[in-house]
Image 1 (cartoon, rainbow, N blue to C red):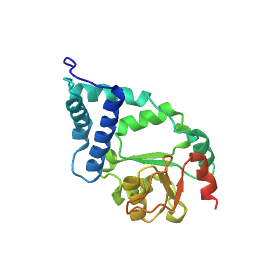
Image 2 (cartoon, helix red, strand yellow):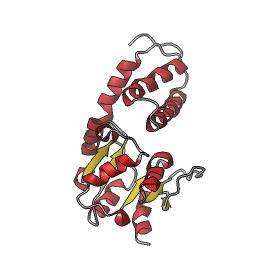
Image 3 (tube, rainbow, N blue to C red):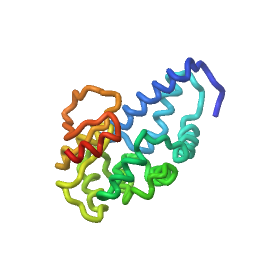
Length: 201
């Protein structure tokens, strides 16, 4: 990596990174950019915005190496997954990188409750494309559409994908964001602990 330039407050840089990263993931989900491009481009744009003379490829490599070991679970994740795994099968459908997702699950402590992980990298299609949900359904031991629900925090990927695939969905919305999209969740919760009562209504 090269020398530092003008940085500014790190929290502001991180906020810009988050916005850039989200925009690139949305472009990936629309099939407009490749995942390998996304991995580096998010750092290139962030560094350019912050005036940092750093190598985005090196930053991407270091980030991906560290990511599997830096897992912060949403409050209630372990308890809810443990409870749901006693009632049915839990799978993960993700647009993330295959080997990183496997390592993150192992580091998180959620591994014993997860039956399968369906990634866009292995499937070849990204959420909200119905083909990744069909791929995930094929990984389940016994997929029953009427007894399946997608739980996710992304309206444009998780909930819209569930709508298109024809299964129920639950929008995890802890920030109480307004839904101005075409996606229509079956349920909406602000805390993971609210999921089980919602499913038993």
